[in-house]
Length: 257
Length: 295
Figure (cartoon, helix red, strand yellow):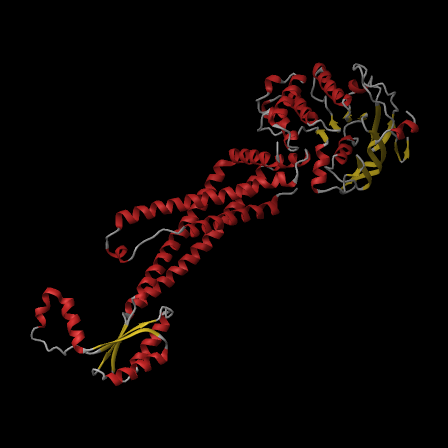
């Protein structure tokens, strides 16, 4: 991927010299600069504790950077407040590593939450929930409390909630941590569908099986710094016809790669 | 799906989840409303009875001698110097005798051997309606006692004094119960909403993360406050009405209650109590939100 192709597409995410420190003196991310294009699928890899989750938390405004600038869809997300921030968050779907499911609510209710806050019609919500559950083979869990599900099922419900509102940016933290091979394929299928419909997707993972054959860009983080950033060949996920990514972006640690 | 539909659904969900706590709060609010409105109802009825009684208030000045028409005119002027009065009526000894005889009815023959002038002449002074306070009546009575030829002034002082002390005591009780209503309604609702917020912290955090606006998160709590105020006050007033109905049915015609007509609150007062309760409960809810809802 070249600088020319990078500039030809709008950047969904711009991170410039971003650092995150936790008290007393723990540096989780150090001098991260990366640009992710709109509609791109992007892998964030690294060992546990490398800083992947922190980076996702910064992107969805759960944490504030100690230094540097983060822009999502052209907006400095840490300066956006009130209804503007709410609107921005409706456009960002996040599947958290710890799922953040409401365990006393049913699967359907958990998935519906992200659509209810943007005042979607009840009929549309019902249809979308059923469709997502069918894609993840969880149709029979529609009315089950999420607290009664297995970890793998909970993980899939969390992912369904993240993509339910058709967001333009999807952040996924370890999407396959508790899944078998078949469920992993279903999850990736769902993500690729969202990607094909135009969403920018960032997947933080240390599961090599899901990015090994990928033609998308892969950024490795080590001790909070960018260790490497592959350029990707723009051909998309190997198993999916019509994957349309490959847009360029720059990235780097200190000096951009 | 519009904003209010979502909000009502969210509120309904909250109510389903926390109904035992909300029910207890609602009962506490209704009890406070009942206590306050009970004393306020008695107070209003006492005031109304006092008002009626004061319409019939008359000060009677007993005279040593029956005044001549010229003296009557002088006394009339003297009385009017203190304050304007509604009516001044001179009662001669003969008139007083006839009145007494009429009051005795069939037993008037006990007066057969009595001289027709054994009762003293008197002046009946009906003060203006503006002369209401006990101290004003006392001052007027003292002034009348200084009139030349005056023997004694009577206006049922003991009864009037007791009545005024009782209404004063009642007004203190009403103020105290009003204060109780404010405290319980505000603090109970604040505490309930605080518990709800703390119990749903995880959900509220998630709602924020998926893009719920501040109004989407806050409005259901405000609605809960409004609902608690409304149902609490309606329940309290309904209980009071039941109590009032029972009392007037079972105790009317007996002693004390027969002295005056007991009436329930007019619609304006009912509306004010309901609004006050709603405002207090909403204020309690709002206070808790400001304190504990971090969005």
